[in-house]
Image (tube, rainbow, N blue to C red; front, side):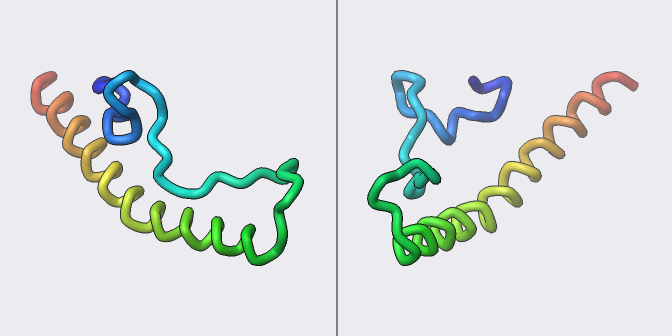
Length: 69
């Protein structure tokens, strides 16, 4: 998973970590408040995580390009 940069999202056994509340349209007890709370939590997670992951990807790409000169 290291090659895919997914190690931050998996536990020691390779299973996904619960990083935010996951809700689905099929959840029987899903109401507006629960849904909006889950969306807000997900967006907070993405706001920081996307930038960090992009930095890691850029670093990896720079390394590949530097080594292929």
